[in-house]
Length: 240
Picture 1 (cartoon, rainbow, N blue to C red):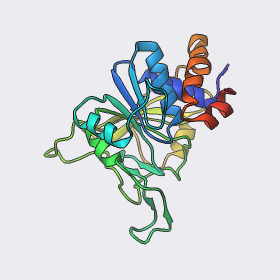
Picture 2 (picture 1 turned 90 degrees about the vertical axis):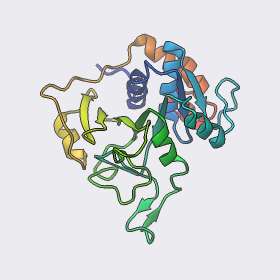
Picture 3 (picture 1 turned 30 degrees about the vertical axis):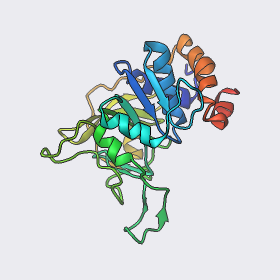
């Protein structure tokens, strides 16, 4: 029986991908991966930097500090999302339609492309798993998932976590492979709701749900910490 919210399952699943990292950075508009980073901190002592937090131990000086640390190889993991994500792990943060006369314009990529190239473990996330968001080919590449072999690129996509599943990314093959399916969902549903093709093992395990200790961390220390800088998320999800 599922005893956690979908967001809590995503937090736990993302945190499971962070067991071997030392420094995790979190950008803006990222309360779910931010919570996962704080859970990883509780589990293994990882350092966490969150843009927008005023808590001294998580505070950064914003983008400049983050970019410098990434360029110097001092950030091990980061998170990116997009209005569209495709099967080659390209992300679109720019808009829908033909550039530059797009039908819909979003806020833009900021430093996403730079960080995508620099940080070794970039975990993609979406809180909506549909053919509208996970597309065959993005309308505009704000940040590319893969590069030519002649391009020096220490960073890149590692995994994709959604409300339905966890996928791992193979940079050489430039394809996703289904790693696990969240409880209550099926392979057929994932194929139906995903706009790109992906690889799949013969047997796909179920995503491990957070145990009581993990949920206690998420709903306690993590919830209180993520309330700065995400008070609305903490109040809605955890009542903090």
